[in-house]
Amino acid sequence: MLILGVNASSHNTSAALLADGRLAAFAEEERFNRERYTMGFPEGAVRFALGHAGVRAEDVDAVVFAGSPTAEILHSAWDALRLAGRPWYRTWLRDQALVTGAYKGWNQKRRLRSRFGWTGESRCLPHHDCHASSAYHCSPFDDAAVLTIDAQGDGIATAIYEGRGGRLRRLRSWGFPEHSLGHFYDVVGEWLGFKPVKDAGKTMGLAPYGDAKRRRADFDRFTRIDADGTFTADLDFLKESRERRASPRFEALFGPARDLSRDSDPTDPRWADVAAGAQCVIEDAVFALAREARRITGLPNLCIAGGVGLNSVANGKLDLAGIFEEVWIQPAAYDAGLSLGAALLAWHGAGGARRFTMEHAYWGPDTKPEDVRAALEVAKAEYRETPDAAATAAELVAKGRIVGWYQGRAEVGPRSLGNRSILADPQRADAKDVVNREVKHREPFRPFAPSCTLEDSHRWFESGRATPFMLKVWQVRAEARAKLPAITHVDGSARLQTVTPSENALYHRLLVEVGRRTGIPCVLNTSFNIRGEPIVNSPMDALKCFFTTGLDALVIGPYVLEKRRVRGA
Image 1 (cartoon, rainbow, N blue to C red):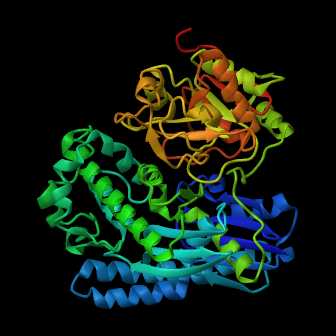
Image 2 (cartoon, rainbow, N blue to C red):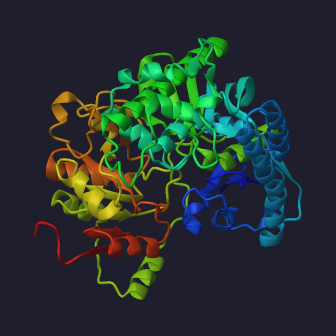
Image 3 (cartoon, rainbow, N blue to C red):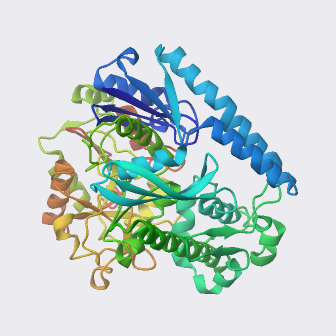
C-alpha cells in the first residue's frame, strides 16, 4: 500500500511516501525550488518521492494533506469576532483564514491533479495530529506522551497526546494566539531584528550572551505559566501594527526595537538580556508542559514535535531533567514533518501495523557518481578521484582546510547530519570565525555544532547520550573546552550530533580518521549552504557553493576538488 503525505498549507512544504507502512522517501520543497522556508506547492518533493520509489501518481493508494482548511477558517473567523476590540488582530486573522484556509485547501488538490494526474480521493488531517504522529510513530516507543508546540496550526498552538500501541489520543490543547509559545518567541525575535519563523534559532543562539535574570521579571508582567502547563501572553504587548509585531507596551518595557543599520552588535546586553529572558520563558513553559504530560499520561517517555521542538537548548535541559526517562524528537520536527506525520497517521488510522522507526535522517535525494561526474564536466572543474573519500576528507580537515562534504542521500530537517555538510577542525580556534566570515556569511555570534563518534562522545561532552539528529544542546566538559574552541559556545555548550556506523557508516569512518590524525574523533559540522539559501540538493548546487565561497576543498562522491590558493599555505 502506497500513501503519499503532503504538506502544502504552511511553510516548509514537503512530501513523504510510505510503502506498506515504511518510509521510502521524504523531502522538503525548498531543496528543489531553492526558496528557504518555502510555502510553494511541493511539486519537486512529490516528484522526487514518486521517482525514488519508481511509481506513478496513479499507483498511489491514498493521498493525505496535513492541515484542515475548514478548521483554519472556523478558528480564524471565531478569533476575528473574539478579538474585535483589537483591529490589527481581527484583520490579520481574517486574512489568514482566506489564505491558509479557503485558497490553499482548494489549490493544493488542484495542483496535484494538474501536475501529476491524480484523480483519486484525498483528505485533510489536523495539523497538530500530524505533528504528533510525526513524532510518536517515528519514535522507538510503543507507548509515549507526546507534546506538540509551535506558533499555530488549525487554531491550536500546543497539545498533549497519549500514544499507546500505535494509537494517538489528544488529551489537552491550547489555542492561538494568546497561548502560543511560537508566536511569543517570534515577536521577541522580530524586536531583536530577526525574521519571524525563519530566525528563531538566532534568538536561541544569542541568549547565552545575556543574563536572563536581568529581564525575566519584565516578561512576567505580560506572560504567565501555570502549573498545568498553560502559557498565556497579554496580546496587547505582542502586536499592534502590521509593520511591527512588538507593541508600544512591549517597547515601553524593553526599549525601541533593534535598528539593524545602527545597532550592529546584537550581543550588547540591551538585546542579549532580552533574548536570554525569552529563552528562559520558553524553557520554563516546556518544563511545565512536560510535567503535566507526565502527570496525565503516566508514561515514562516523551516525544516532541512542532517548531518549538527545534529549540535544542530547551530539549537538552529537558532530556537531563529526569521528568521523563527519554525524550525523542524527529529531525524534521517543524512543519516539514507534517507530510510524514500525515502519511503515518493515515496508515495507522486504517489499521496498519507499526513497521517503522526513524533511526537515521537520510531520506532525501541520492546522487549517482555518473551524475556528479557530469556536473563536474559541465563546470569544467579540475578534480581527482579518490579510493577513500572518508580518509581524504579527514586529511584535509586535519590540515586546517574547510571542506564541503556531499555524500549519499540528503538529510531531512534543518540540520546537516554528515551527508550535506561543511566540515572543519574544531580544535582550531579560528575555524568558527573563518567559516562564518568566508563561507557562511552569517553573524559572528552564531555557534557551530560538533559531530562526534558516539563511543567517544562521553570524553568530551557531559551527557554521553546518543543524539543523532543534533537537536539537543549539552555542556562541553570543562577540561575539553580549550581543546574544542571552534564548537564551544560562549556558555560552554554545544549542539552535539553523535554518529554510529549503523546510522552513517561513511561519516562515522571520517570521524574515526579525523581522530587518528588529531586525537579527537570530532569535526565542526554545519549545513552545506550559505546564508539565506537552503542546503545544497544537487551536485551543481554544491559546485556553486564551492566556487562562490571560501571553501578550500570539496569531496563530492568519490571526487575531490581543491582550490590552489589555500589559507595559510
